[in-house]
Image (cartoon, rainbow, N blue to C red; front, side, top):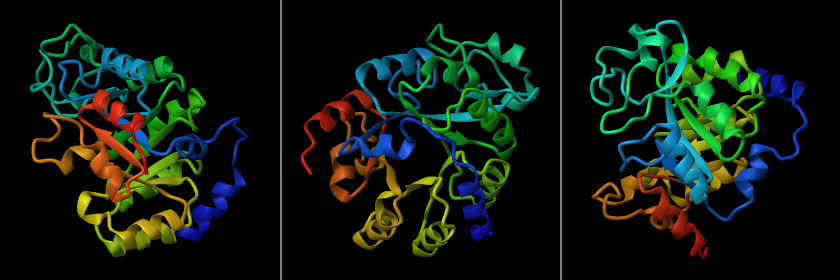
Length: 267
């Protein structure tokens, strides 16, 4: 399977002025905003995405779920109850119904993935998680529609089936895979997939041996920086901690502070 994937990818490689790999290589460390920044009522909304892009964030991390009529929308939870003034499962509401919902403590609406793509338009890289596999096709179709191959990558989590579904549908879309142990990391590298751009690792996985394997295969290491401090970054970003350990990309709950730490970063 891995060999077939590799051959298929090389068969279709569009020409871009700057690839996503070149973009991630352009800085010593890369900053990311978890849901655009979680310590705000506007997390996972266009308003918050606009703020962190204006501040200089490199990557916006977000979440995708399908509506009843198959529209990918940006929401972390499976239901509307916790985050919005509406109730019920996201996948049992039409997009028209979702549009009438507002994020609690905010006047913002739940954006569709298409709205996010149209506004961001390459200003930052989007790191979008497939929260369920039934959003894969529609989400990738939007990347095709907006020619966003070089500024979007999708999280397949630590789920090999999710990875295979995404890759079998599109042989060029950029992907992230989360490795949970050495065997899992070796599996991901053995795919020989040049468009598996990012390997996610939790703190315990980022050791010298694993770093050498991932970097030796040309992969970027991403980590959630809030896992590096007990307070989950509510008292300050921990991006420097993650970069010191060997991560290339830090996804932070406190993106503005993470940006400030990147400006002072000295390897």
